[in-house]
Each structure stands twice: as structure tokens, then as C-alpha cells.
Image 1 (cartoon, rainbow, N blue to C red):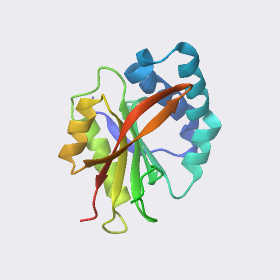
Image 2: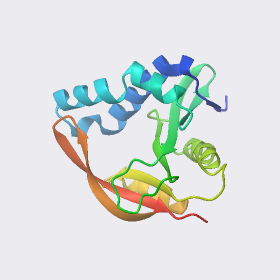
Image 3: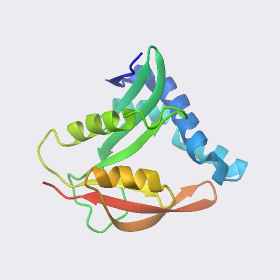
Length: 172
């Protein structure tokens, strides 16, 4: 069965919370002390925080589903990355994750296309992404979509600080 993509609604807050915590843990959980991972997941992916995001008109989230099971998600909204060139109106791909075993089937590209279409619906604008410095596969994926490294910052996961690269795609 080919997975489908749909825009998430506030009713999906529980699903999104569970999926986001699962995909982050599957992708990066091995990098952190358990207390740091637990603190990050509790804060970043709390159900109430997902409700706020899903109800906010400046943000959008998509779920990739196989039948009724969510296997991936993407989120986009105004850019919040710490870079001096970020301007009002710039957009950011905030998350793009698939559950383990679903990568490599073109699903990430489909979710990326949905997010990019939404981010660019009002016309060309500069787009941004933050990506872990050691996630070379994601960096190659984003480069194929026109993003280039323009900076870096430290991303907190509990008490741990990860080196993140800031990627930008100028307005066309």
C-alpha cells in the first residue's frame, strides 16, 4: 500500500506527539544520555505543544500514513533559526522524519514537496533548515533541493548541545 500524505489537524496532536518522539529517538536517541533525551522529548513533543502548532495559522504539519498508521511527518513555519540574515517572511522546514525502515522510498521527497509547496504558496521567499552536522544523508538530500550551508549553532537536547548546520535556499 502506497503511503498517503495529508495535512495534520489539531485532532492529530496525540499521534504527532507519539510519532515525533519515536522518529527523533530512532534517529538520534543513541547520541544522548537517557535523562537528556527524556527531558527533550517531554518538552519538544508534548501533546499540548503539538496542539498549539497544529492550531496556529502560520504553521503546517503533514502526516505520511500507510493505511491509518502514521509513518512520517514534516513541519514548516516561520524561520526561527539563529542566523543574522533571517528576515521577516522567511520560511523554515522545521522537521522531516520517517520511521525506521521507511527511508529511501521517495517518501521524504514527497513530504518535502508538500512542505515546499506550502512554504512558497505566497510566492518566492528565502527558506531555511537546521540539520545535525553529522547527518550527511540529510545534508545531501537538502542540497538536492537547493539548500546550502550558511551557518551553524548549538541545538540543546537536555544538557547536551549538538552542532547544527544552518542551510538556506534563497528566494528564486
